Image (cartoon, rainbow, N blue to C red; front, side):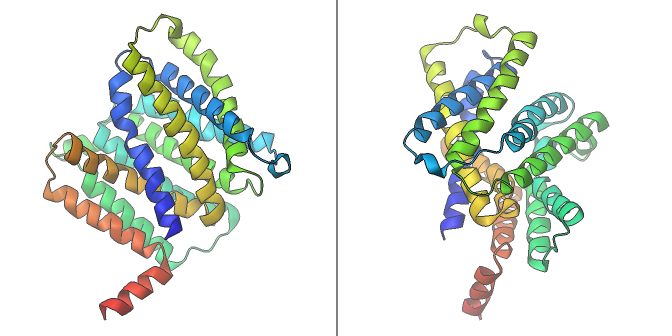
Length: 293
């Protein structure tokens, strides 16, 4: 199905981001890297937008600003600080709460009625993430530092808020919408990079330049365009499921490319997440049940 294909493509792009970031993160500051990604992504979408019909573009500058703040700027600060206090596995579990907060915000702020299938799929997805990301060192790592946990939970809430705002971008082109969002994020992040880091003094090789360009074009520009397209067609709640699939992609790519072990824990977590995706579409679930019977 088209929407699942789009969701998988988005998750593949974001899930593969880890490998490219790992190749440059030791030589480029995190704020500088985020600013460069936003800048390159904005340039990429600007070029694409030149080939779009002029009448197809609708502007929502206030929404663009808040989306840039909640989707790019605030989560970056919160995640960067939060991961100083908790392990990456715990961080991935907390960030995976985005679908939960998206549904909660819809219910509380917009009086949306949650269906049983939506509730079951979100709970199952989060359970799968917990199993997939559960630290192998023991339970003590899960408690972590309360301050770090709170920061990461706020980051998940920020992502959820941005998702809902993106759903409110009715009409217009996803290319133009996300082009404007990324330009605003760039305008905010660049001064922060110069304030807290020294972006003009970074020493990187030619290969790392290529990796940064790839991160900007695909992991900022193209993926946000597809993300906004998915939100416009299927809604913010369905698009939020990419937060469940991203860790799965990371585990699978690690197994295929890096030859990392695929523990039983990972297999169970992936299976539960796939089951959650099945529940996210009631019609598909009913067809599957009929075939099984």
